[in-house]
Each structure stands twice: as C-alpha cells, then as structure tokens.
Length: 141
Image (cartoon, helix red, strand yellow):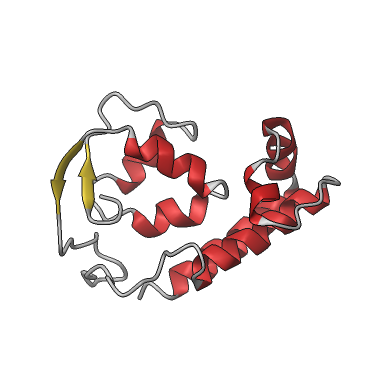
C-alpha cells in the first residue's frame, strides 16, 4: 500500500529488483516509496500505471521492536512540504557531486538518466540517501 491505495504488483518489474518489493509486501510502504525515489514524479507516474485493488484508511505495519505500529496519516507529502524539500536538497547534492548544477525542481526532474546513474552510484550518494532515510524513518515512530 502506498498513500492509502493497495496496488497489484504481480506483474511489476521493479528497477530495484524483486527483493525490495518482498521487503515491503503487506505493509504500508508510503514512507519507503517517498524516501527511496529521488525522481519522485517519475516514480509516481509509474505507480499510477499499476492496478489499484483496494484502499485503506488504516493499515497496520509489521512489528517493529516488539510493537505493532499504525501508519501515521498526518504526514505531508505535498510538493512544497518538508519531505519534498528535503528530497530536492538531497537530489541537488547528489547531482552536484557529478558536476550537474540543479538550481530548480525542473533541473532535478530533467537531469539526464546517465547523470542520475553516475550520481547515485557514488559513495557520497549512498551517504546522502541513508541520511534522508534515517531522518524520515525517525519521524515514523
């Protein structure tokens, strides 16, 4: 489930591989989806192409440290919200590491695929995305 919609991913070939989908199967994967897609507009477009098989107002996650956690529906994933701003800043840092200047959201969105591949393959990229994931994960519980 992502953003309250339950998707049929039976025939979906995730670019990150099948293990990632198995990891989030049966849980609310909204935070994971938002955190791990630096080019969120592209990811949302691909997500919108998948069949929706249900909706959920409340969805319980897997146990974490011995407790079941209810999804926090108060998160703001708007394009001008905290998380989107953090994602844009992280993307700008990653792109700058490979010499690509991204001064605006359009620059980030329109960065060529080859640039993104170089930017996300670096050790620095892994550090930035880990920090981004930890920040968001910390607000989950």
